[in-house]
Amino acid sequence: MGTRVACPICNHSFFWTDCHHAAETFVVYDLETTGLYPEADEFIQIAAMRFSAGYICPEETYFSYARPRRSISAFIESYTGVGNRHVQHAARPEEVLCEFAAWSGDSTLIAHNGLRFDSKFLAATCRRHGLPTREVQSIDSIHMSKMLFGKVRGTGHSLDHLVSRLSIRSQGSRRHDARGDVEILARAVAGMWERLGLDRSFNGVPRHSAFLPVGRG
Image (cartoon, rainbow, N blue to C red; front, top):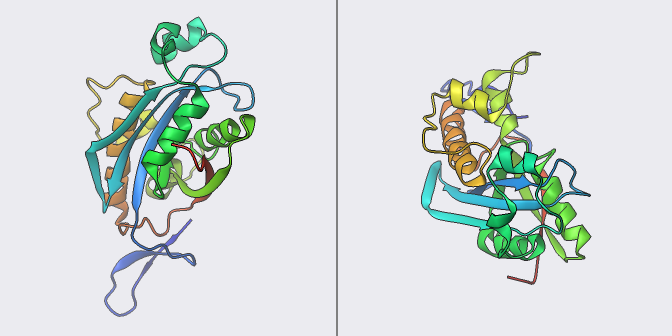
C-alpha cells in the first residue's frame, strides 16, 4: 500500500507510491452469485456505476440479471432477493459479462473484496466459456478501508462497517442486491477517497489484475 508522507518543503501530505497512474475513469461494480466458489458457481446479477475525478456518476450505470445453468437455491434467494423468476429471461453470465466489458471499456474496476471474490468470478466466467480476455486494473476497496481505518486485528472492513463509519444513509437500498450494494459502495469509495486525500487517479492504493472478455459486445 502507498505510504503517507509529507513534502519537506510545504509539508503537504500525500501518498507515496513507486507505481504512478495517470488520470483515468473507474467503474465501481458488484456481483451476486449462486454461491461462493468461482469454479463451480455463476454470477446472477451485476451492477456498476462510473466514478470519475473523485465524483460518482449516478447517470452512468449498468445493470443486468444473468441466467445460471443451475437453479438458484432458496438460501441465495432469501439472501440476495434474486430468485429463478428474476433470471428466467436473462442472458447467460458469459453474454452479460461481454456486454459489461464493452460498457466498462478501459476503466479501472473497483469492487469490495474484489481481490478474493469478484475478480475471481470474472476470470472464471471467461475461462469456463473459453472467452479471449484482456487484462484490466482493479482496486479492492477493502484496501482503502485498511488505509483509512487501520489494520489492527479485529478492525472490520465489511461494507456494513463502512456504512456505519462513514455515516452513509442506506435507507431504500437493499443490501446484497447488486444495485443497492453498488450504490452504497460508490458512496463509500467517494467518502474514503475524500478522507484519504487521494488524487483523482487513486495513486497509493494497491491494484491487482482482473480479466474481462474482448472482441464481443
